Length: 98
Image (cartoon, rainbow, N blue to C red; front, side, top):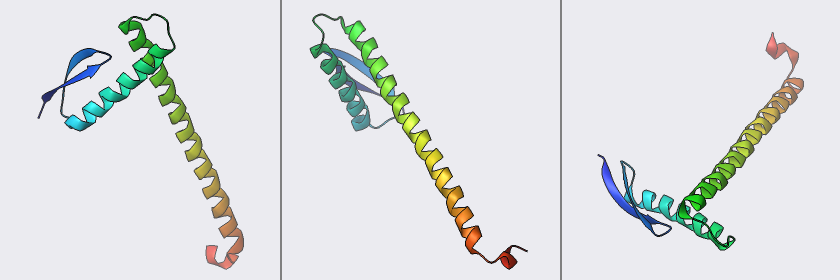
């Protein structure tokens, strides 16, 4: 069921339409709002649209870094699995594999 949820991000009201839980949408909006406010602290002047773009770039960077770590973790798990399988095969009598 599609519904509209009103949120505020960096002083602007937005109507978000979707099927997601209200609390989840509000959490997302709060997350973006916090990031925009944090970026604004380090800038002398910035328009809301400039802050929005910089926030999007920062969040995309965080996402890409998380994805890279996830892939590296999966690769590490794969290497460990191969090593363990080789170790098990070395310990097993060869007659079991014939």
